[in-house]
Length: 418
Ligand code: EPZ
View (spheres, rainbow, N blue to C red):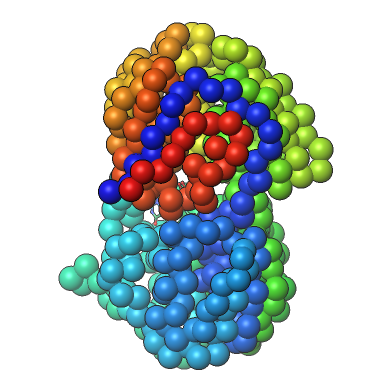
């Protein structure tokens, strides 16, 4: 199995390009199923999750090609409505294909996505909403057998929680439904706005994206279009944390600072100075970070849960004690145990993590527990004395394009060893 080997204590400098957002590319690729014709999706990151989405589209009969950062999807040849178990297991967020496949073909067949390192990852909000749109869903033997008699029918859906995936599935199922659908308590993430921008370019009639009330007027059909995916706000925060923990000055390019507005104050409280103009962000970090009193993860526009692990890594060497409260996922502190192996002092009490900053971390062998937890270990390794080896890095490759090349390009001593 591949691992990342990092020699810590090197300052970073220079500039790094931020890639397109994984969590936007995935629903947009699912949405291409609804557009009869060809769509060009630009700024698509080279990630294993994107490759899995491409494999699903090809399995369904679409003609998909990739040239550089552009993925071209011709969905005219769509001739199936099932997702193989292997692909559902490989990427549990394949559930976002459910609404699109059923809306386009009148049926959808797939296994339950199952849990992951972050917890059980229920899909009750997805299924309840899709049933309200008229989809018949049989859940048996760990499988979802879905069918639509005639056409899905628009309705008003109030989400108990502003679930990103459920909001995306409702949008994908309702854009070509009969009548109007209103989503109340919708997720407001930038990735939702990006998905709706793509769909509106394809001829959909969606308003309110980015707000907690979204209205979708059903249309008869959608046509392909060209779209560029928004920058990845979590990758942005990850490289900011790399600069912060190494006391470096770094420039990040192709950034949308508006998408991380509630994260910037956290870095400033830690003692970093941040300047941004156009699509560039410049961060300068002190030799030692101040502790951050409290970080609460919240639905957008609150502090993103995906940024919790990278920021916890940088806080592990801050001056003082920081408190994290993880309000989104039931089990998103698995990286804490691995950070402790590097010398961090972290105490977990349910949803609360108490991080007592230490003067230094020491390199060791650590295991990536999930995508953002793995990134946190790399960040910690940049600051640890000696050599840190991070294994199970397939988790990291799901969400970070060429992470070791990008870090080497700004001065880190890191290599991938197969
Ligand atoms: C999306 O996951 C992202 N993934 C996650 O990013 C991100 O952490 C999450 O949104 C929150 O921002 C993608 O976009 C592919 P949710 P999603 O539905 O849609 C509960 C990463 O690191 N819930 O908003 O699965 C759920 O258990 C990944 O890039 C239900 O109870 O997140 C969780 O506690 C990790 N029932 C909370 O809601 C449901 O039917 C938030 O889940 C659905 C969700």
